[in-house]
Length: 257
Image (cartoon, rainbow, N blue to C red; front, top):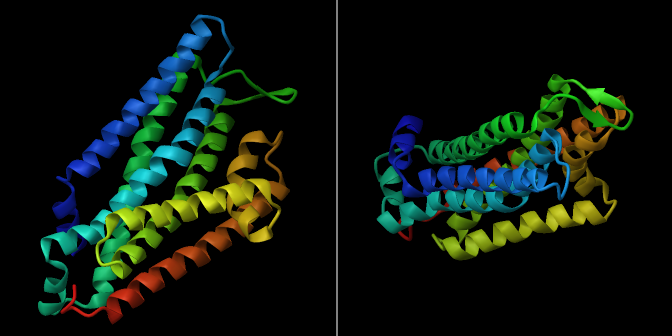
């Protein structure tokens, strides 16, 4: 069933436009920083550029396209009138929920990876990833890539929770993509801003690891503990999101879908 779902959405203009838009965004940010370096308005190394570019993408573009596409996976079925066909054909409702959730995660991963690959390549070619200073020491290229990857993967994983929330809302609102996107994005930015300006433990567990791994002088046990607490929190949220989506599919009235 997952293969059929992928074949249905792989030709989607939304999917490929989102990929191309992300690549174009990465190139524009790289050209902007390269111009600032060339004109000597600032000194930007590969680590500064990559961390800034990945952070901006994770806070602005990726949440939007991830939530939109996640909602579209449900809303398109309402638009085509095909959602009830799964159930008339005897497909188990839990399987539909599982496939929709898995497709959302695969799409999110593809959006994230394409951008990451372009940013890391441009950072290495235009700015260089060696000889990067942090505090009073020089990081190896491996450590630079490790820090960037850990921070980015953390941000992408957090976005996945709200993409799952968008799917639940799309079912609840019966295909209203506009309000679904608005609500899911609003929830995402509330959590991000609250985690940045407050010390509430639960919100801090979600937002702190991605920030601290870029700034800490050393990769310490304390940072590892922050990642562990955050990972447990994310696991709980993903489990709740999938459970809620499954429950919504189980309870929906196919005559109204």
